[in-house]
Length: 117
Image 1 (spheres, rainbow, N blue to C red):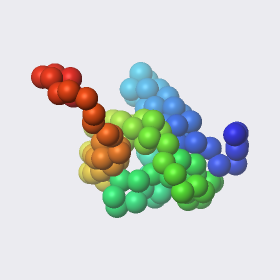
Image 2 (cartoon, one colour; image 1 turned 60 degrees about the vertical axis):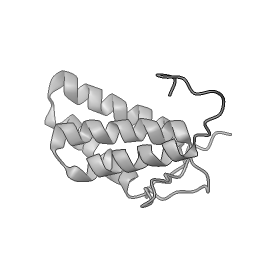
Image 3 (cartoon, one colour; image 1 turned 135 degrees about the vertical axis):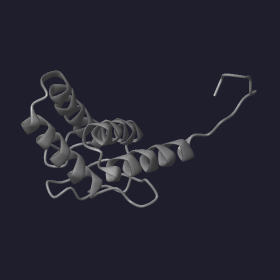
């Protein structure tokens, strides 16, 4: 179901990645500022355990009780890129925390073999 007033973190992650790529390509500090503002907004919705709600409202508050894992991973990758661009350790911590949460949701079944995981 589409809800334009409460977009998926998956969609927000695409936008954030586009802003970061724009900055990386141009070096334009205004684009980095927009990326940083977006990254900080999403950061406000991240719980200490790494859970990021699957939809956010315009105040960056979660509007659903579930996580969009692909959105969480996309945003986490962006936070790590923002850390690289800005040196702001909050982005590094958020990226690692969100990735830890997603890894905790994985169920590993089947035979183990070297390199498979």
